[in-house]
Image (cartoon, rainbow, N blue to C red):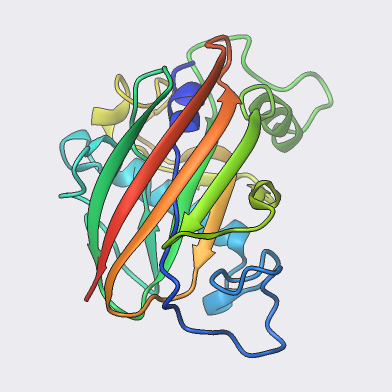
Length: 243
């Protein structure tokens, strides 16, 4: 299914060294520019913010969807609240590099959507479903793992590396609901029903603390296998302006 391949081609990058420093006892996993993997910024876990970002991405129509915007002109579409979602970049199924520019308001935490599998249910395939006695959650977790095969991941913020980047993988704690825009059925996820439907998110996410005003750069390089497409290396560079 295309939905399980497209988002794994995304590479993200790095943020600036001029970020708001956390207090000394903050859970930052050795990466003070990030919120800790097990923290609850703005009263929500990183798992929760990751799932919320999927709901946001599915709600945006194709012609304004930040995922399909190669320049960054639509990076602010549908953004609301304390966390700014930095969407992946749609790319061909081959190794390469892409860039994007985005202007972000100051005081916003920034969720880097590195790469993910969004496993929506149901699908047109009548065989796509839980086995007898298997929960929908367990079925979707097992299915998502077939497509999420990140072999290496390097992320930098203004040239400063994120340590142990592969540790920032999140699988939804529960099945949640998404409502996909109908224009995304043929371009993004053939299983979109246009009504609220169950979904499970398996991906890599990094929540950056608010950056100082000015210019910052995030660079992400990843190597992995996307279903039957073979091994690929992708580099994505995000040029951020914080105002």
